Picture 1 (tube, one colour):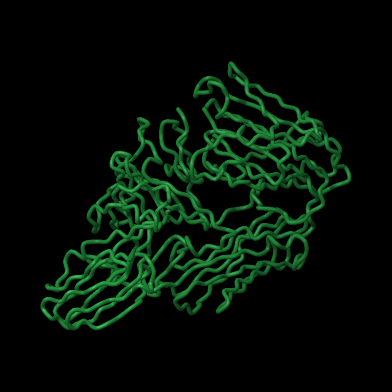
Picture 2 (spheres, rainbow, N blue to C red):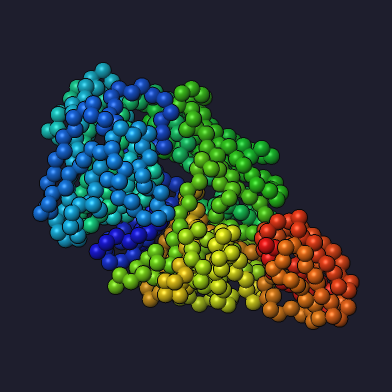
Length: 620
């Protein structure tokens, strides 16, 4: 069976700790992710800025690579060296994998299960290798292999083997594996790599000081109709003596269980925050007195770790109690050690990390605020998953995001962040669910909206606000904000934006497929936001002021508030982030001039001692 065309990263099932779903006819789910990883044999490093290159190959014909295979197929498949982009499969909209963005364009190595003639599940495995010539590293005791690659995963094993005796014996550094979950080196089975994915592997223990070193890239599609692997810009570099790498930076409310919210209302701020970073020592020497500075301009955090051994990863963190006003906080995290306070390897010691404090939007995601250099967005929705019989889940897919309510709150609805690939015509039901019932695959709601139709205007603005019939109250507790998606049998596909910029615990977001006996981890910052307070227009069909009307709607920005009963009251106009942009007094017929505010959707609220009138208006 053909792989599922998902535009998500790192999918895995939650049946047991780190258990992997391998049923080819079943959907593929996100991997359960913890808050911090541990030291691994292969550590994904996004780049070593400057190093002495001891040997390099860009597949430009300078070196002769040996292609071998032990295929079980009738028509064997081999690695090829090509300069043609189209030789790599175009893996579908939204993945960003095509073409391969290697740093050179004079050739790359490719193994392509997807394009193998007549390939299908069960017709014999594609098992193929590409092996370098012998490399003399006898004068170099500390060495690192690095390369750029690009892949999409569907049950394939892929990895690197290193030999120090001319190919008689090999040491394996796996990258993805069919065996499931987190493979021994801890690198997750992401369905989609980055483009390119930069990989650095410390091969000192095998190749350091050796005269007959060989590098081999191996691939096994495990007898599935798999995807592919493209590799380029292979280098062996001299390992720096001192090089600590800031892998990730975090700021998380101390009671949030590791969840990091991209936007937090002032009413839901924590009393204290865990501020820190995950630091990997890529240097040949142990790193002493590792110090982290997290600078958010108006406040800062400083923390230390006395020693990180060579090849180890550790957290450097502190607990802080910053005073946080409404606004966007742009942070810069910088890590130093006794051996590295600057120099050619220092660029990966600095990491940006942003978050926002709001009046009334609560969001897991940081879309729109994430630093451009680190933002990773994906998308999924109706049609992204399959039932056991292979049919796409076009209707009834439930996606949830976890929210900690620290003070009792009012909520008007949910803002659902839409991918541009959403097709108008689908419907969404917004709800809040008890976490325990949801985990038991019980989709009962604490309260929910009516069916809300997605329009072309919603898709164009990148989100839809799904409002409840009335402003609802949430007591202190933990809840799932949920959306149930209906494409109306595939005619109006709804695709949600998924923010993968910041690693989240597996509990942060989850999905439910109709008929399943369990829910599954998404583990990222899904684009489902809470609209808090009463100014969003919830219950607009239950206005309590009679005789008040607003027209024309939509308009060019000039609106008239009719007032048949000559009601006296106050008028407030809100934009879609809940900010008051205009106020006036209602006394007889009143004209609103909003032409200076630009096209978009706004909320007009009229309040008097007799009740209120709320309407969403559109400026064309």
